[in-house]
Length: 160
Image 1: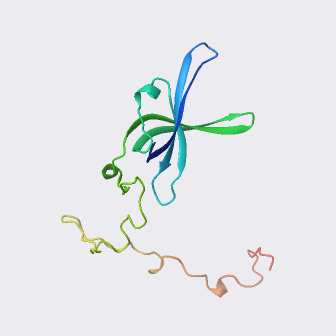
Image 2: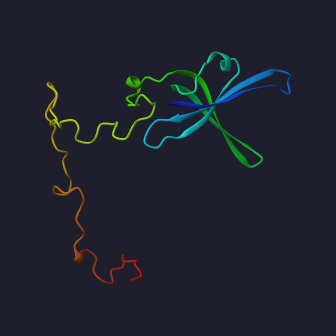
Image 3: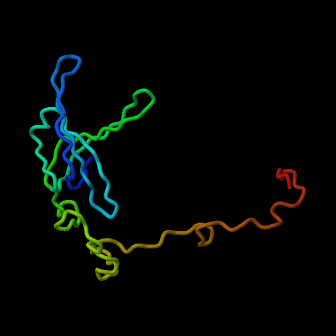
């Protein structure tokens, strides 16, 4: 899964030794997504990748992430782990971030900004025909006639 945004906070490096005696380290960051309603996402880079993936506060990136939840003592915890990062390129994403890293109001094309062209069938394709409608041209059948179910009919199991 990929997520785009601007790094807004560096939470630093954490290191330790596991119960098995192996050294570990992880680096944590906070990313703010682009869009009308930006979201803040805390993620971490674990192991040797913490040294090889270099991120800078204030720069925008596209992150390749894994999201995983786990249960401990009847509570659920979610980890967002980054395994690759590249500088954000709006041309590849179809986004429109402004120089400040965030889309400004009105920064996206507004409805009607592009002229509407009528659809033209590509050459070599047969003309589209409307789908046949069952039941005499209506998409839904009509209600049954009132005399279909006479009052007191044995098959009438309704309570009224």
